[in-house]
Amino acid sequence: MKFIFFLVICLSQVFVSRVGRKGAIYLPKRVIELLGISEGDRVLIRVEGNRLVLEFVPDPLSLALRVKRWARTTVREFELESEAEQGELYDV
Image 1 (cartoon, one colour):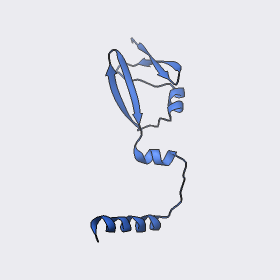
Image 2 (spheres, one colour; image 1 turned 135 degrees about the horizontal axis):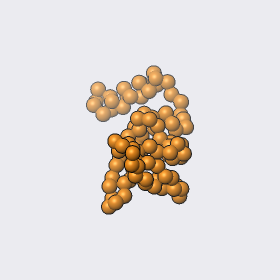
Image 3 (cartoon, helix red, strand yellow; image 1 turned 180 degrees about the horizontal axis):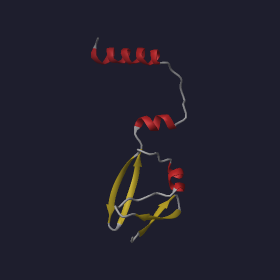
Image 4 (cartoon, rainbow, N blue to C red; image 1 turned 180 degrees about the vertical axis):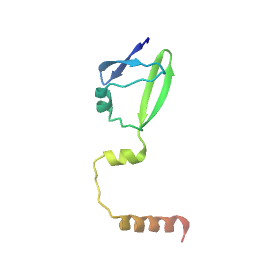
């Protein structure tokens, strides 16, 4: 099986990986840890000349679960706030 090697440049570090038979690219564990990538994260893929650029775009829910909480609220408080704002928006 022939493998094509490519370099992944990440935070001034260089990693070597392989492209498998069906074009699958497996990122080194250290890259995944450095970027905080999780299974199921979406990736933007761009081809720039002879370079492949990957940009990971986490969905809002997983992003919200990863960041440090800075406020506390209950579901009831959230609902009341939401209803008040909807009332202002729609003159209810």
